[in-house]
Image 1 (spheres, rainbow, N blue to C red):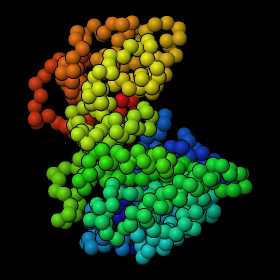
Image 2 (cartoon, rainbow, N blue to C red):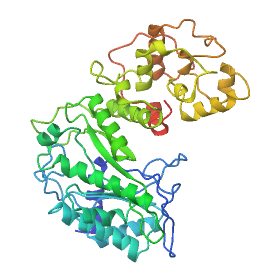
Image 3 (cartoon, one colour):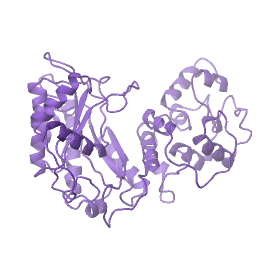
Length: 432
């Protein structure tokens, strides 16, 4: 099979893996090589400065020995199969890079013959890029669950970021849909990589190769199993706290196989995926805990409101908040005020007391915040009453409207609940 034919098959097979990002690497160009994986250089979709940056995202092979029921590449599926050679992937990457098509590589693979054998193929590929072609650009690679620690060490010294995908959020779901995989075979390597990253940071030396300098990520499939948003979010919280993961990615389940143990969905649960991403930002940057956002009586996110607005309405007794006296972490709890806006407010308050006009001049959006704050003890002029139902109706309408100050509208069970363009931007910027 020709290399380009393989590329068509294996690039298409890679689209289901969402755990691909690249911010945080500081690999520099050296020894007259080509490419650069510095912080501002490479990202799969959006850089920290808002630029859209591309990686070559492919599978090394889709010839899998496993029969995971949710996966398009399961061994019992009748699909076109292909496997690259290490030299082919290296040549593709360099040729695409020289043509300015890409700035880095995301390489994953199905399990070929065994986890160790697959890891050896990935290591051979990246060794050619690093040592023969002197490619110093960004490389993100998927580590294969069940591979030996020696191979993880070798791969980790060659790449910028590793991902080990959990995919299913509980042991029971793993047994039901991916019985050939073991929970320990996924979590133990993640813990090993996490410890290796910490050890590398403590033992930094110019004579020692860095180990996964851009950290590790994972992916969770949303909607293939019955776990609630609360269970998924608690799992993510534990991964951030215990394993210092760089990012948890959520992938709405896409029905590609027929099986009695799989749900029948008319469409992927994109809104649910969107809500989990929003909540993920709240965990990482806003000081929220999973148990605050959801609980056993409220185990799933509100489809009509983002998690921060939903939390605020369920804790309406904590509002309104006076903008001129609240501390930084309290400001972060106000819907509509993000990390950047909170810092602007803190700095400006040192010079003068803020009113709503001053907030607008600072670039702080009061579209949602107006319902939850006071300035100099006064409400926003159009918020004529501090009432939970009044606020909720206006916030829900704001979610689906572009009007500067939307009025009430009767809600319909036929409202489009898919994520809007604004929803997606919020997930990328983290401004909730």
